[in-house]
Image 1 (tube, one colour):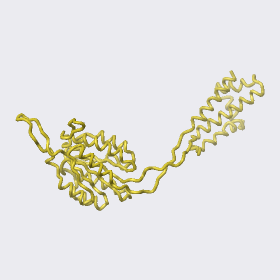
Image 2 (cartoon, helix red, strand yellow; image 1 turned 90 degrees about the vertical axis):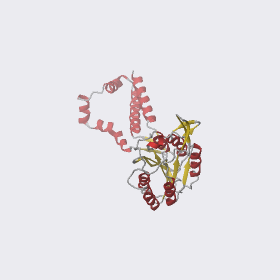
Image 3 (cartoon, helix red, strand yellow; image 1 turned 45 degrees about the vertical axis):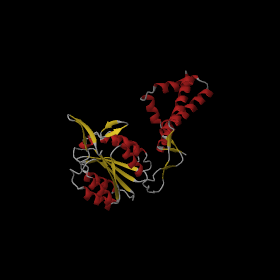
Image 4 (cartoon, one colour; image 1 turned 180 degrees about the horizontal axis):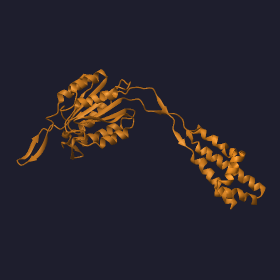
Length: 322
């Protein structure tokens, strides 16, 4: 249907009539207000025959009314469209501490650091989360909320791709990341609330211990899925030849498993890109929470139509006068 967002503007339609009926205003307009093209226009009407003069006045009035209609901001409101709101509240907590710069991951045969691999895989995961509200937490020595829970997957993906190693400090505050997620979901009323926490180390900083944070998460009904990142072995070239090392010695799998167990989640181990892809495929199978349907009505702005016709009418009047 058609709707005017600023209907009060229609009161201005009678403004020319008010000016014409008030002698003082009319006199003042003659002596003080100078509008050259309109003054010349009305004076030139004396040289036009009465029938043409009547049509020109009518066109001018119609043009004025069209200007008023355009100023009232007309919009066309379409049919109601259902929003895809069946889903869950999902927080994604990503470790950006100094250890994430370890290059023990590969993408298409190219060695990359752990954070780059997470961005590569998690980007597709986020895009598939249609209907879920997603939030992003980056944590290192401190935990920061990058995006609150939102349906805007593109923004979440963009902020994740723009994250850099060390932006939150070199150490790892797993407990603070969980605590921040608890704080953010506490305000929601949904029962299906999930935290996916990705880290490659152990808790070395922060104000709250991971297991205490997990206890708080369990009380709030926040299910935590923990993912340990890092390869089991890589070969590094040294002066004595290739040497096999384990780059994941600092990964505290016991604590991550306990966190998942306390909150009703699961622990996963991602040793490479394929493992992380498989983990996200499993997470895709989580049951969404049914919510009440929400709708919105698309609106289309129409002010340019009456504005265009008004300008054309004025051009016609001025052209005819000339």
